[in-house]
Image (cartoon, rainbow over all chains, first blue to last red; front, side, top):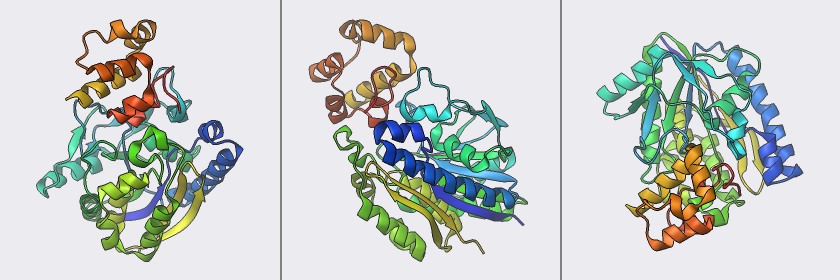
Length: 281
Length: 71
């Protein structure tokens, strides 16, 4: 009988230089505090001895192009490479210096994909998509110098309308949990991104966040009010800049009815940084 | 379809270093074959990233094109 042995969600640009440049010393200090918390969370995750690490994150038009944007996509195959971007700027630099190749948990990824199709989830599959900062910045911070568990990367389209609904993401998480429960593996789950930044995906509004909206999301996760979270409309996530909360909704669906515990919440101005863990039975 | 064309060009500017060099050298010539409205074309030529964003250009592409992005 398989088991989810660890579940957490966290912001995914864990890169002090980015916030140092774009926010200043205050931003650098805040993300350094978050990194320390995430490293501590990683020790808990690795102590749970997961056989696989499912990472639910989004693409930033690094991997998928406007030729085709999957609503949700499972990375299958035996290994995955980190994205290479020539002359990388901004948050793409978070990948600099990280290992080039990571193992995948092929069997778990295949089960999530194939049983998903049987269950009515039309997941896309990719044999070649590399991973950008949304996956590897948190994974590398969680694992530090320890070997990275075999990964199952799972993409959610957070940015290109029309996105999947919060309720659909929650349902997809429930599917992942059922696959894990039916299998033989100990599985860690993380969701990444957010919280509020880039409201409306408007260049004119870069540098602002919606703290009140995010504090409501956190309260609902702490209370385990997953119906209220599932009812979130994309227009609200877009207006608040909490697009990447769709990734979190997959994880919430996977651990429901568990309640979250806040490990970090920081109001930077440009973004609300957060890290939460779920208390699992 | 125009929004698609704007974003295809932004994606190409991020990923295709040769096209990016041509664009930096002579933006109007690099865009000669692109199916853009005049407003879109002028926004590219002036590299008016806010206007490109208002015209449907992806924020994440606009801020991450080497030598042109940033915010």
